[in-house]
Every structure is written in structure tokens, then in C-alpha cells.
Length: 465
Image (cartoon, rainbow, N blue to C red; front, side, top):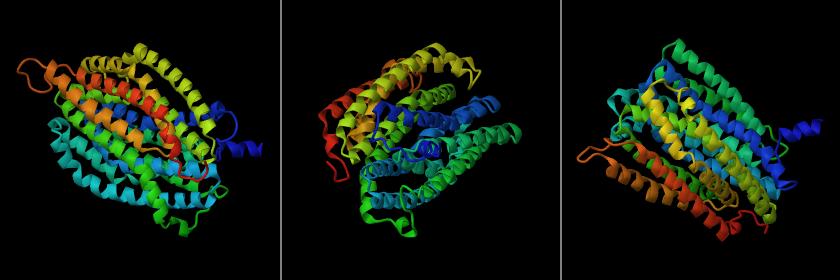
């Protein structure tokens, strides 16, 4: 019994046994965790939408792309650390694994402090540059400044949980996240409904809860002495491991940076349609976050599964696992599309009672629905390539689909559909989401082609063939 308990709550070796069992055992707690994490922003939106109003809801949504842009440092460090941890763990290289984890802990602290300093300084200039509507400008800035000032908890949760997942442990990050999520809900209602703190209360609730989850993840990691050795010497960054961390993580960080920058450009277009469209867009992005969770979950699972098996020299298991992962991911996506089409309007009512916002949100969800199937292919195959050490290919595909396809199509369609002589934003907001759907489909096709080419098979950072 003790052995089973230890296996459930410890590192998971995915180089042995059934690939389907490995992926399901790893993915289920990861999916629940991702859903819980999505509740952070969703509860924020529900609380402000119901207790403050659509203006506050729009303010939280308008701040999203800016926050995501500065979080790319965490994404880069997290992906690089997860790949290194999974491959070294699969290869049985304890010393290299220990050096990787020590370097990651230090890099997380440095990147968090950087954002805590830079984030508040650039908030007002950037929000002004985006022509944020006056009625939500101050609230958006307030929300962002508080989030940035307390970003260290978010940093440690996202990065250290990435290391834990690289070691095959998706259970403990889930437990810590559920605890933090419940705390976030309680604090949201207490600060906003009780103390009337508005969007500032939502921001404070979020950073307090994230700090708890980050501290718990770090506590869990340092106690895994059976897997690696953590000493003060390991915390001093070694150039060899820093270079690998940057080489593997930078493309993923750049991918997120490019995506976030494109979202800022799209947010500027969204702002031109007015507060109602911004609020509807905020609601749709919250629902979209839940709809995307299975895709992101299977993608992350494939990264860990691939990393460990590449480290162990088992390319045959990687290919077998990819086929199984695709079948599971596509099946879940098809079910989700059906649920969105059936219950989309009811989901809108959770956030707002304004008929205009509800109708706009439902139209947007219907436009995006089929795209979630395409994103299942993209996320799973990209996860395989990243796990093998090929983080450049997904980066280039993201650049093509976001910069070359989505942004020009969004602005082009908006221009073509606006009334003759009308200003930007005077037409229907359909181009905002139609352009996103097109970019998703093209991305799936390009990712499938890249996977078939097989260059990812030669990118391992360990010496095993």
C-alpha cells in the first residue's frame, strides 16, 4: 500500500508500461489542474461582472494581453526546465537533473524580480498606446500593476510545477492549485462583494492565492530527495545548464511573446468596437480557456512522455504514444465542440446579464467551435516536438499563423466589412474571431507536416540514441 501511495504522489516513469495508461494517469490530474488554474481568471471575471458591472469586466479583459506579454519569461524558463528534467530523468542522469533544478529555482527568482520592477513602470504607457477606452483605463491599469507587483507566486507555481511535471508528477501541483483556487474564490468574494474593492480586490485575491500555490510547489520539489540532490552549490547557475535552458526555453518564450504581441495588436482592434464587444470578448476568452484545456493538457503530457522516452532512447514508444495521444485528444475536442454549440448561450449568463454582450459572445463561440479540433492536432504534435528538444519548429509555425495570417486577416476583414466611409470598429466584430479560426486550421496543417518530416527525432540533449 505504501508503495502504491508513493508511486501515485511521486515521480512517474513513463518509459515503461502502456503508453495509454501513462498518458491517462498523467493527463487526468493535469487536466483538473489546468481547469482549476483557469478558474483564477474566470472567477475574477464572474465576480467583477456580477458585483461591479460590464465596465469592470471589460477592464479585466483589456489587461490580459499585456499581462501575457510579460509572462513569456516564465513560459520560456518553464518549458526549457520541463524538457531538461524529463530527458535527464528518463536517462537516469541524477547529477545533470540536480543542476537543472537548482539553476531553474534561481532563474525563476531573477525573472520574477525583473517583471515586478518593469511591469508597473510600463503599464500606463502601454495601455495609453492601445487606446484603451477612458471608462476602463484606470481600472485596467490598477489591476495590472497589482498583478505585476505580486508576480513571484505565479512565477514559482508555473515554473516549478513544470519541473514537477517533467519528472512525471502531475498530482501534487494539482492539489496545491486546488487549495489556491478555493482560496482565490473566497478572497474574490470577500474583497469585492464584502470590502467593495472592485478590480483591485480581484487582483489582490489572485496574487495571494498564487503565492500560496508557488510556495507549496517549491516546498514539494525540495523534498524529492530520492530523485535529485539539492545543495547550495546546485543553486549557483552553471553556464552549461543556463545555455541549455535558454536554447530550449527561448523559442517557446518567443512564441508566447509573439503571440501576446499579436494579441495586443488585436486588442487594439477589439477596443475600437467599444465596451460591449470588449466585455463579450472577455467572456469568450474565459470560455475559450476552458475549451482549450484538454488540448493544452495532452500537449503537456506528450512533452513529458516524449522527453522521458527520448532520454531513454525509446523513439518507438514516442511514435506509439503520439498515435494514442492524437486519438484521445481529438475525441475529447469533438465532445467539447458539441457542448459549446449546445450550451454556449447559458455559459454567457454566468458572466453578465446584458443581452447585447450575451448575443455577441454566443456568435463568437459558434465561430470558433470547430477550431478546437484543429488545435488538438497542433498542441499534441507540438508537445512531441518540444519534448524531443525541437522548440524552434513550433515557434516558426506560431509566427506564421499569428503574424503572417491572423493579424493581417483580422484587420483586412474588418476593413472590408465596415460601412462605406465608416471608422475602424464601425462594422461587425466577426473578423476578430474568423481570423483566429483560420489561423488555427493553418497551424494544424503546418504542424502535421513538420511532425511527418521527423527532424525533431535528432534534437535530444542527452547522449543516448
